[in-house]
Length: 318
Image (cartoon, rainbow, N blue to C red; front, side, top):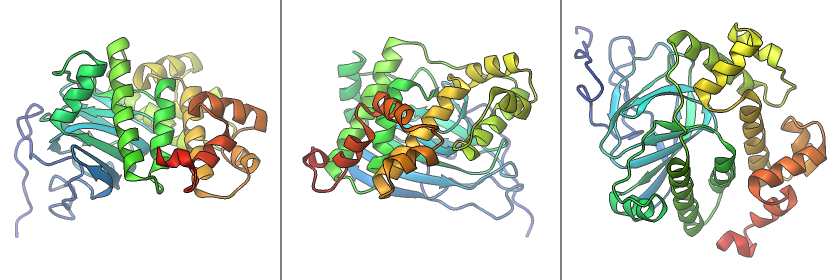
């Protein structure tokens, strides 16, 4: 049987396969160099009328061909692990842990993995009527469309993302719906108030910054210095700092802190380890710094955060 020959790829939207993001379809063939891949399977975390949350684990890499999909609903995806290149009608962005992928309903898009293998996302989908109601209240327009393809891992989003990631582990349906709507509100508030559009850098710089992101992700619990990160990027320290911020919208320290806090929050929720042990295992040098940073992000101390997540706690039912 002759190898599958994909159709010629034109501009974005001209070759759309009309597949939902992470619909669960499997690849056409194991030969990724000969056929476009299908979206990775999605695990439904929670769903209700007008909204759905999926966990999407992707193992595609540089040898897999990018393909077009379509957002059937308004989509906000939190990148939890890995990095990939996302191209939509609103631009092209390098996605990384803590960043938010934004997709307008009906828009075609591509995800490319030429810079590394694998990623994990928590994908939130909103029906038109529900999102319009939220947008009308927060952004002042029922016809709001995302003007950018991503939001960086900035501080105002750190708290909602921590709550969402830990909410994957046993939260009630009511709580997950509240958190999902809260995420949409936070995104709309930021986009209505400030310009968060990142630059589309040369391909060489995208590769270098992606290498650094994965280096930080692998060593987030270890001491990391700018000299080391600049060496990984094969750039001077100043050029590295400038390029990193242009590409990702955050500084290396902000990204590192975001990763450490998210990991600590998950550990508080899923383990019985002491707060001090979690702080040191997450890469913090002392407990007081960890407590202060955690309070800034989560709005409460680590102890209060852990207590609020107990099944018999009244706050877990709110």
